[in-house]
Image (cartoon, rainbow, N blue to C red; front, side):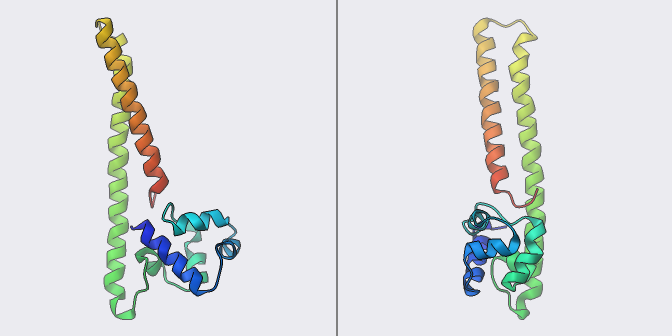
Amino acid sequence: MNQIKIGKFIAECRKKKDMTQSQLAGKLNITDKAVSKWETGKSIPDVSLFSDLCSILEISLNELFAGEYIDDANIKQKSDEVLLAVLMSKRNHFSFQFITSVLLGGSIGLIIFPSQVQLNTLSSVAIRIFGIFLFIVTTYVRIKKDETRFFS
């Protein structure tokens, strides 16, 4: 899924309808800041808004996900591409969550480990510092990824 492409498409469709971000937001009972985030590719509409958004913009769900108008001749091919992209997005998200969970667990282990074995002070401090660093970096990456993910 290309959030930036989808966002630009939402903006294009909204402008075609001579609507402001505030007007679109009002029809969806959300803030204009949410619409702005979609249009800049920083987020994607909530699943509960897809149907109403598509209806207001007079586009199909496939067109929304593709980030472009789809002519009748290409509907099947584009639909397959969109479905495949959604499935790949879910698989990639699961893999990312698994890897970061392992790294978070490992970082906690590194923080606790030195107190469980006999190590000199320098080694103990170095292992703990590395564990804290790994924990902070992994947490930061996970939060940033969650801000931009398409599906949970």
